[in-house]
Length: 387
Image 1 (cartoon, rainbow, N blue to C red):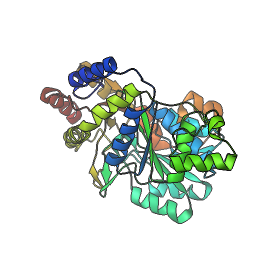
Image 2 (tube, rainbow, N blue to C red):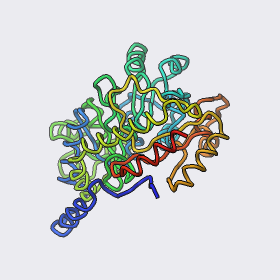
Image 3 (cartoon, rainbow, N blue to C red):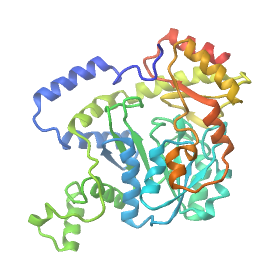
């Protein structure tokens, strides 16, 4: 079978041996030096000033929204535009934390929200929470410009697009902050894990406080001293002083160690996935059964799965059967139109139509794109895409 996930880690044998040695030679596994080193290394590779490591990508989304509320940048009741084609834990924090979600349709040639689509909603929204779907983006330069002109906070869920670039800029670096996932099926695996990146130092401090109970232990010394002075707390009571609303979404040193092993392969992983994507994209071109993807504005497409959106649900049934007959593991395109999911219908009154996201929901699927695909497997997948 051509599996969605072929291994737990890139260069798995080496990583497992190193992990075994690490576990045998260390006594402390709660968040400390390995996690801090991974944050520093990830921020450098992502070309951001700050990175905050957390337990998983969904926790990264939740933490970011909580930190923005604690900071006062967002307030309960604010309307936040979000990509309707997304993963549920992108929109769940908006509902859970008292914000009003505004679902935005995608374009079929980019699978992402376009500036034109957002324009119809921009006057209603305090923020735009984009999902860079499966390594792709729409015109992020124009979206960023419109957000800046209208005072809209731009955020990116980049859990599916590590390493993708547009106009020389990594996806995840167009907004005020971005989130990442290191789930075993994603680009870099720490088994479970996530990251929030930003260049905003104040937001960075809010993220550190909200990540662990609301205390100040992870803050830089000057920020920690200022917070204690403002609250009138001495060093003894500061150990159990809690300054704002928070969670405990800390990772472990095991996750941090694996991250430090895997980040060494960032370039190799991204290059191989991008190379595979180019082969898949070329094979799809000219097959009129599929909606064609436009990546002409992108420098690099790095995805962990390749989407296929057929023109009709009937064609989707045909191609799903062909992929399954060839022993290829497939899935729906993330959560499809998330507004059709039971949780969303339960909590949000939303009668608007999003025909493109709905078509992806009913006529789309994806298969895995990972660095371990063999030449024979690539040939099989390309032949299936040619139809």
